[in-house]
Amino acid sequence: MPSRYRCAPAFIIDAEGRRSRQIDIGIFDNLYSPLLFPHQAGLHVPAESVYAVFEVKPTFSRQWLRDAAAKAASVRKLHRTSAPIMTSSGRRQPIRPRPILAGLLATGTVWNQDHFARNTKASLALLTGDQRLDLGCSLQYGAFEQFDLRACRYTHVSQPEEALIFFML
Image (cartoon, rainbow, N blue to C red; front, side, top):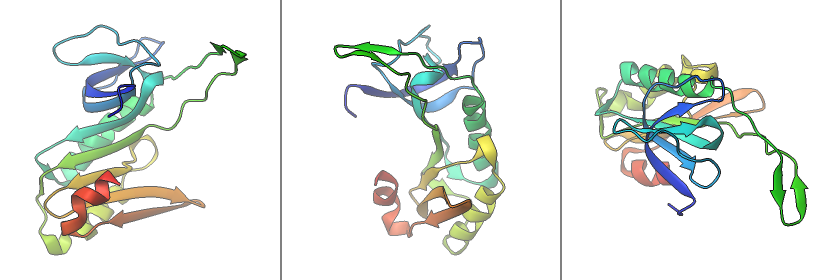
C-alpha cells in the first residue's frame, strides 16, 4: 500500500468516546489522523480516517458472515466529524466522510462448491443497513462484491479459480 495508507488490527474510536469491537484489519489514512493509544491488541484509530474494515476467519459460514457484519456495524455507527482544512490556497471546506467498506476474508468455506454462491448470496441478503458487507474472499470457492444501484442491491460471486484476482480488482 502507498505509505499514506496503513492496515492493521485496530479499535475504531469516535469523538464521543465510543469504540468499535476489535477489527482484524482496518484500512485507514495514516496521514489524515493521528494514531491514538497504541496497544498490543491493536491501534485506536479515529473513525474519520477509516476507509475499510475486514474480518479474517478460517472459513466462510453464516456465523462468520454475521460476526463480520456485527463488527462492521460497530464501526459504521460511530460518529464521524470533519473540519475545514487550511491549505496553501486558503481555507478548504470540510471533506464529507466516505462510506466505510466492510468484508470478510477466509481461505475456505463450510459450503461445498456447488452451494457456495447460493449460500453466500442468501446469507448476505439478511445483512442490511450498517451490517452490510461490501466484499469478501474465500480463496477456496470464490469472492463476492455487493453494491447498490438505483435502489437495488446487486451481489456478484466469482468463479473459484478467479477468487483472489476478483477480490483484488
